[in-house]
Length: 173
Image: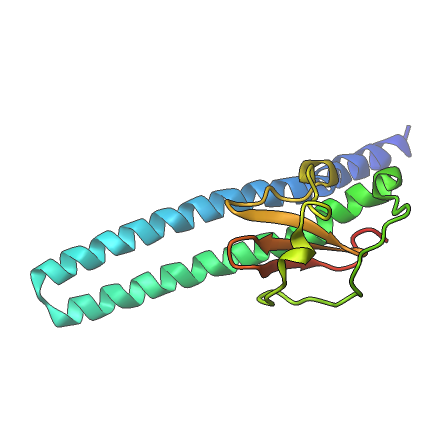
């Protein structure tokens, strides 16, 4: 009986620690929502300051707006890092069959792309588009964006401009 109590306490303490990634994601969603609200409030305050005509107040409100945008970008970056490190890697490790490479060849050679790179339409043609990104726990692409397979890497491509938005190297390894 004396041994069961410490084991029960350790289990109770360790169980919430295993849920950190899901809680962190929920927290980041709330943080992003709050940051967007802060940006709207700062924009409204800036408009009021511009209507008042006080240059010092306008300068302060512009500073506040820049700070709100900076915090939002930082939270987005943090969310992306958490996603890149936690979500799809653990999913891949537990569902290896979904990531089987098979016979897959491209008519062009491998290039290691970086975000911001411009690529030709041949790289994100229909043959290379990942039609079901949710199956691989990839985030849903935005408007005019597609997840594309490039050898073992996965690229998020802006199809209007042909630019790479995000790269997940070694996704299919």
